[in-house]
Every structure is written in structure tokens, then in C-alpha cells.
Image: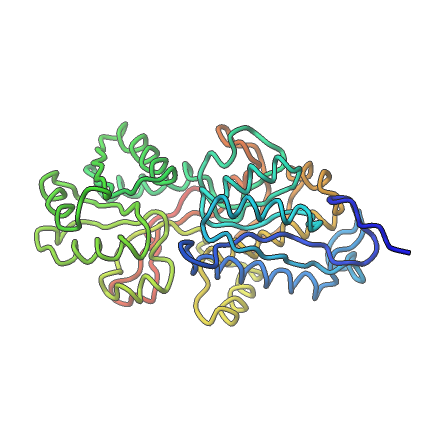
Length: 384
């Protein structure tokens, strides 16, 4: 006699694994290094949840209540920064009886994941994508840990203004994400006397860009472009142009966070401020997780790795307290109140944002110290 397959999304009590679908960029043209860090955080958190007893029954709370519970299992799919590939993965994972979806780094891909999850009734906790318009319409099925782009990039604009930069050039490639960032920066700078100078990197060579910076008298250049191409040659061109010795190079999207940046550029990659979503000081949980992530990665963990860990921490707490039913999880975001590696995580509705949002994740403007490029300096901190 055959055993009937479970209805996708229905609660199970048979001791089988509770599955979470994880979407990460693991192959080009995706940002592979970010995907590797994100996956390391997700996997470490799953291990810690299972070491603490797994996922208990409905109504249990904390590790003690989960002893003897169902193990958590990560079902990983590579998005390769391809929205269509991600959409197909969402449909596949929905049929594999995952309780929820997690992850993704690239904003345009996360939009595809969010749309598919919403249509299929799957709860989705976005780890790292920041684009404000993660969904076209408000939904209860999607929540996000990363700060909305409008929040983080306004903080970056405030840093530029505080440092005295009023003529800011933006070297940008065509993209919904870069266009959104440009608009946020312009709207923040203009009322305070700042001017944004757009430079279309689909038309300009690195040399022509340098000439334009001189002609437009820019004091700062923001790289809203991919890494390593064309970011690396652009940085090298500016660093070697004596006319631009005093210009500030910035990369708000966080490219200098990763080791490949320092490996590609060496000393030229230092002194380039970027956004990072870490607290000034870690508590005991963050410190412990940071040590474990370093061992797992073989290098210092990025903020993306911590976002991955916090993603599973939140989902595990929801699964313990509200059960594994998809519909139940999707209605439980406003009840989240859990200690993450970077602070207390609670979700709320933010004006203009169509998903449940962790409203106050930590935001820093950081650069690599020119005196020691392996060390980071905190230059500016967003409001708590």
C-alpha cells in the first residue's frame, strides 16, 4: 500500500525534515562571492538549529521546546543572478514541500522570487536584496531583513554631505537597481545644495570618464556598476589620473566588502566608502557566529553571511512558535521578536514598502583603511 504524498504547504508531524528553499547566486554572472557568504550563513544557522533539537511542534518556544523535534533542511538552488532561472526554482521548490523560501542577494532576482512566492502562497524571507519595490503590490507573504535601499542610500548621501561633497558624479550602468539608487541620492542631495552628475558607463571609456569628472568639477565619484567589470578598471583609471588626486571614490552597493575587491585592486581599493549592515559592536551571539563563519569561510565573514544566519534564525523561530503551515507562517511576520546576530529583529510596515520590513537593521558607511587595506574603518553610522 503506497503512502499518499503530503499536500504542499500543509503542516506535518511525522518527524520528517522541515524544508526551507534557499536561493543564492553561486555561478556567474551572479556575484558568486556574495552567494558563498550568504549560503555559509544559512547553512551555519541550520546546523545550530538542528544541534539545539530542530523544530518542535506548534506552540513550542525556544531550544528546550524543540528537543526531539523535526530537523531543519536547506534545499539550495543557484539563481546565477537570472530572474527567469529563479522563477523556475521557486516553482520547483513549491512542489518539494518547502515551508518557506529564503535568501537571494541580487535585487532584480529577489523581485522575481517575491512575485513567484506571492503567486504560489509561499512565505519568503529576503535576506540581502534592498530594492524598495521588491513587489509590485503590497503582500503579507514576503518579508525582508536587509534595509530598504531608500533607507541605506539616504544615510550614504548624508555621509557625503557631512564630508563636504556637493558635486557628486555617478558612474552608472543600465539597471533598475542602479537607477533607483541614483534617484534616491539625487532626491537626498538636491534639497541640501548638492548636485548629482550622471555619467553613462554604457557610452564612456574609463579615460573619458576621468575627463568628464575634471570638466564637471566633481569632488566625489560613486561607482554604480558591476564588479569586477567595469568597477576595477574605473578605480584604476581614477587612481592614476593626477588631476583626480583629491576626488573621493565611493561604492554604496558594497563591492569593497569582499576579499576579491582587495585582491583585484590592492592599495587602490582602499579608502572607498561603502554601505555595510553590521553593528558597531557584536553581542555574544554575533561574536560566536562571527567566529564560526570565519572558520567555515576561511576568511572574515561579510555582512551578507550574517544576513544569511539571521534569515534562518527568524524562520526557525516562526516555525517553532506558529507551525509549518505556509499560510500560518505568512500571517506571522508581525509577531517576530527574536535576537539576531546584529540586534533584535522585529518586522513592521514601512510607508512605501510593500513587504514586511525589519525597519532598523544597523547601517554603517565603512571603508578599507589605506594604512592596512585588510582592516575596515567605520566612517558614519545610521540612526538606530
